[in-house]
Length: 129
Image 1 (cartoon, rainbow, N blue to C red):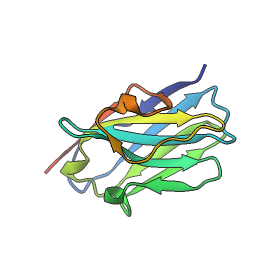
Image 2: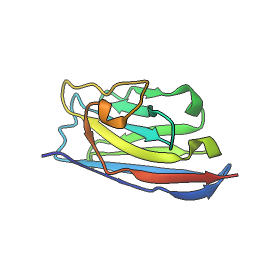
Image 3: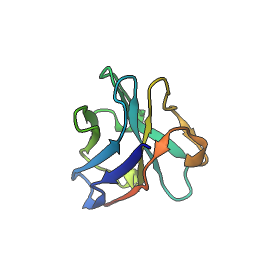
């Protein structure tokens, strides 16, 4: 059974950086996707970024140029490097994975539970001005 565990959240000032990590034990990396979603109070759940096993990536427009997703296939771990953080980045960040043949969905929905995949418990990121 694949288990997803996140780490690396915290509280920072605007302009500072954080690095989130996500490890998916038992995940078969070939053909998989790993990604990060976030949801702030009163806002929809949105895909922030994802990385596919072929190395291709997707970013939501608001984080392009500031966030970078990477993957260590041997460790079955994905990292989200978040630079130049803004108060609008404040949210609970969730790591989600899809195994071979599955696809993480882009866009936003009212609830994170509407998205497919195996999810972690979430980690809080708070950015103060």
